[in-house]
Amino acid sequence: MRTLSKRSEFLAANRGLRFPMPGFVLLVRPRGDADEGVGIGYTVSKKVGNAVTRNRMKRRLRELARAALPESGIAGADHVLIGRPGGNDIVFAELGEQLDSALKRAAKKLAK
Image (tube, rainbow, N blue to C red; front, side, top):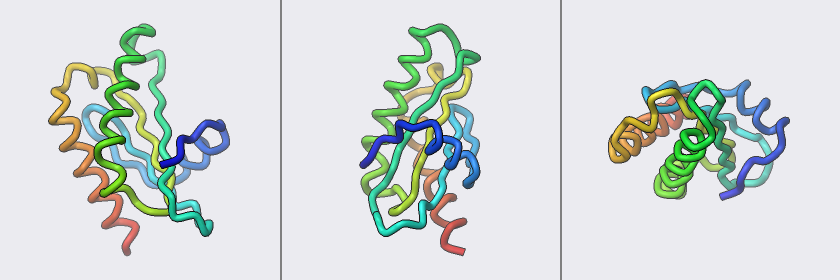
């Protein structure tokens, strides 16, 4: 799993598919190159809360991705998780179910 770090990678992912969930938004964009690896990026805006709240949300998103993306992630695509306000209040197991649901929807949509 490769971590996205450049702004251009996040902007490119923003042009891909969008799957909103109550705790986060999942962006998925196939890269179209020969690399079959999964790319992942995380972002949480200041609208979510102060630095402590944003960092907690990013830690939760990282752990969700670490658990779900190796088996459910779309090969050769970049994934971006955008934290939403109230995401820290949702039970972690429920966030995991939401991510699985979003990844299944993404795979189904990209298979067409």
